[in-house]
Each structure stands twice: as C-alpha cells, then as structure tokens.
Image (cartoon, rainbow, N blue to C red; front, side, top):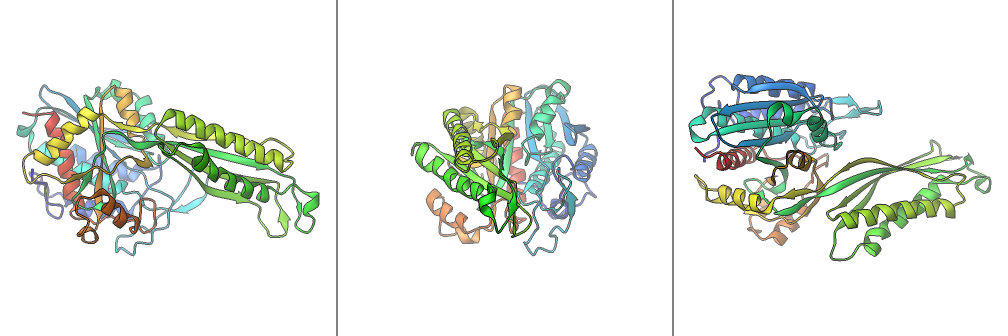
Length: 424
C-alpha cells in the first residue's frame, strides 16, 4: 500500500493541509495529561470532516471516531496525545516554547519529548486513508485518541467512561510508538513487549536544625543518599540474571538552604518489570530497604511509601503479532521492514484497552531516527542497538523524530494492519 503524501492534500480530501504541517503544529503546541484540549479539538475537527462519528470528552479529554463500513470486525486504532514537562532543546524551527501548569500547580516548560504528536498525526493520516478508500475494507474502524498516557491514567479513564459500552467492543487493539530506530523501520516483539510500570513516592522523615550542629538533628539528606545507593542493589543482587527489572530514582528533593538541615526528604521512584513475581520481589525489597535505612538513621517516624501509579505490561498476542507482521511485510506495496527489538523496558498503558476489551493487542515500534547512521547496521538487532544508544531517546529534550519517512511509514503501518483485519 502506498501511504498518502505528507506534504500535499490527503487523497480524496482537497483543501486539507498536509500531514507534515499538522505534525509541526502539534509539536509546537504540546499539552500535559488531561489538558489536551487544543489537540482534542484539532483531532475532532478533522475526524468530523472525514465523515467519522466523533465524540469528545471521553475519559475527560479523549476523542473517539467511529467509521462504520458494513458488516465485519471492529478494529481499534489508538494514539496518545499528551506531552511532557520538558524544556525542548532540539533547535527545530517548530520547537515548542509553550509553558503550562502541572498537576502540582507549578509552571513548567512543555515538549512532545515522547513523540505523541507523531502518533496523533499518523492516526489522522490513517483515518483519512481509510475514509477515502472504503472499497478496500469492510467493518468498523474505531479510532481512539487517548489522553494521559504519560501518567498511566488515560486508558483507564476512557474505559471507565464507558468506551466499549458506548462505541462497541473491538476484535483487536492496534497501535504504535515512535522510537529511535531508523525511520522506515518497524519493531515488533511477540509476547511481553513493554514493561509494567510502578511509580512510588517515598518520604523520609528527619529532625531539622542548624547546619552547624548536625548532632542535634536527624539528617534526611544523608538518610536519602544512603537509601538511593542501597536501592541500586535490589536489581543487581535480588533479581535473577535471567529476569529483567529496572529501578530508577528520578527525583530527590530536600531542604532549601546549605546551612539548614531539613526535616524531610522525598524520593520519586520508577520500577519496570515484565514478570509479576519479579515485580512483587522488587516492590517488597524497596519497602524493606527504605524502612531499614530510616531505622538505621534513627528517624523519628516511619517513612511514607505511596504507590502513585501502576499499569501492567503490554503483551502482544503471539498469533495476532505474527498475523500483523505478515500483513506488513507481505501485503500490497513494497512492504515494511520489521525487526524484533526484544522486550522494551519502557512502559505503555495501551494494554489496558486490550485487556478491558478481552481482545488481542499488537503494538509496535515506529522508527523515527535519521536512517543514515544506521546504514551499516542492516537488520542486526545488536548493531541497531549500538547506534540507538548514541541517539537522543524518548523523554530527552533533544528527541525529535525526522518527519519523513516516519509519517508515511506510520500511516502505512496502521492502515495495512487495519485492512488485514477488515478485508473486503
């Protein structure tokens, strides 16, 4: 299948700007989780122009578009919409200078540092392609533009708002995530493909005082430093080498001045696992280490350990993944190159949409990096990984997918996979 041009009008839709312009506009106007009002309005307007039955404010700021095209399967295509509190440093002419207010009320810079603007644009392109060529498929296209993936709340919010009761239950859930693979390439791994995610807040309680008299205090900074270092031993010493886990302390806040010993320190942790037993082991070890370090420091009270976010691993149904892979590589047109990236320790809440529907999930990586540095790597996963490590990753202030061929590949992948499930 030849994907539509991203610089000119979409097929059958004269007068609508090209997808590249849409992408650059979305990139310049990022919005945080559950604040995606401008993005949702743009999406809804385009879906309505394409003839989709369109509903807004699903799960607060989500958008659902439904295109019924006779009897046949229902295929859910999903894109997430939210951005991150990151100061962009790409130097692009369409770089974001936007600012917003986060959930804690703080003013923060905003950036599409994870590529959700690319996801939205690709799904809009797929929506146009499906609407313009109804003679090539039969069934129902259920397009879900989801809020709040970065907080892990968006998929659940849409399900809880009656997504399937209101719009029908899909036979399969399909989607993609842009990543620093070479543009024009897809990455698809059957089975557990993206890790489960658990986020924790840990508050360590000390006894404050003057920086010149530490003996009269219980210093939470020292307590926090010891805790951070001890936590690093959990994965290396308590998780089997045959298993995978990641534990990151991404934030540590304590005190306001160099000569004042604070009375509390807060750590923010991220835990990624694929296996439920490993997850339980790591979370139990975190609690044990935190409480032990507090006791060792003579903390005046027990620490507060709060699970702030949790969502399961994304598991690609093996049979469905193989079916989609065949469609992408052997379907009409030149086919799309696919590599198996192995399990990815990043996390996604798209699996909630599939499990709530009782439907198989197929979720792949969409290469978005300049393909030139990959020229000598071929399709060898190890060589690709070496190049990838030198590139800005998702969530980096320098992360910026190349517009082409990322867009045409992403549109083509979504449409080809959807049509495979809805043949004429």
